[in-house]
Amino acid sequence: MYKREPLSKDHDREGFDCGSEPLNLFLRQTSRQHAERGISRTFVLVEEGEAAPKPVVGFFSLSLCQVRSETLPAKEAKRLPREAAAVRLGRLAVAKARQGQGVGGKLLVLAMAKFLEIFEVAGGIGLFVDAKDHAVRNYYESFGFVPLTQDGLELFLSVRAIKECLTSLPDR
Image (cartoon, rainbow, N blue to C red; front, side, top):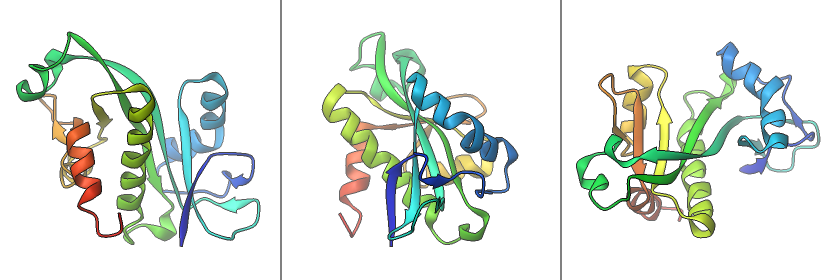
């Protein structure tokens, strides 16, 4: 059984390897600094009952952002002011040993749930993400994200779609 936790000194950041050096370096060198400076928050997935330093199964980071409504699909933009608050899913990664086991989907669902916690306190129109390539874009689209840019690598999921996605899951 997995457990989501805010990144802390109790987690083995050095032992994490997802196969992407920029993501590994973010977790090892940047994520705690960003948290201390209020830039973003990183959440890790660990096995329940692990002792510190807990091996990291995967992680995601979230930050607040401001978006211009004209960058959104017309259906969303027409109901919004010129600029609106949102949340950006900055990074999401799964340890190589856990890839292909549904951990990425679990992390994405946890990120959506964390978005709703933020939404309840501060509002926000949805979740944004920048996919690193078209395969990753297709993965996000399978969760309902819609492409915003010509290359399709910036994607958006509205608060309404997040709520629908989370309520349709069998364990919620």
